[in-house]
Image (cartoon, rainbow, N blue to C red; front, top):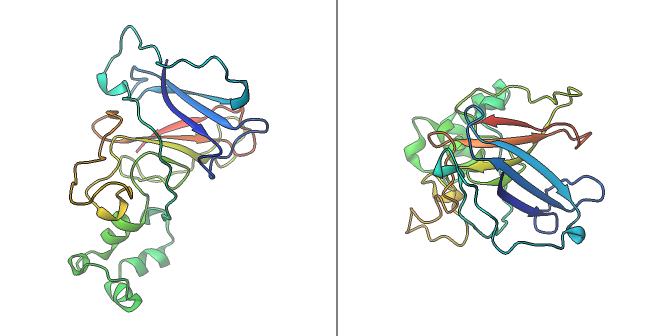
Length: 218
């Protein structure tokens, strides 16, 4: 198993941890199972982690080099995002698809979106791209569908998005420290690639963290 992410509750305010835990460690098997790596979650107390390896051991073999993450430091940044238009009510979909509504709101939206204002919503406001804790999924590979706990049928919460790219050319989502004039900077620091450029999202049961988590390809 390979280390993929290590998250401390002190650094990520939206990380909901089980009682007694303040650290989440995510590992995965660097082979397809069948279309993406299989992940394992470890909820721990940081105070009990004392024997720390300076360099994690690499596996003797991997199916794809893209499943071997490059070491990166996490710089959390909180952003406001909204659900994909496919998760909205018909009334709201009609509103975001009406160019006059955007003009009346005086949002400063680029006139290039006049022919399809819904694209502005999806590209600039809904589902921030990149690695993230919580938030809304970016649908595309599949349509939205209920994410239910396989043990108790509770609605599951988004835990972590493992993304191929940190940004997709839309400057509104660029990390603060990345200069917009260098559009390729920050796209793929981790060197991870899911499928042909998708995201792998992990979901957990909000009522019982010990229940098995689920994974979706977006």
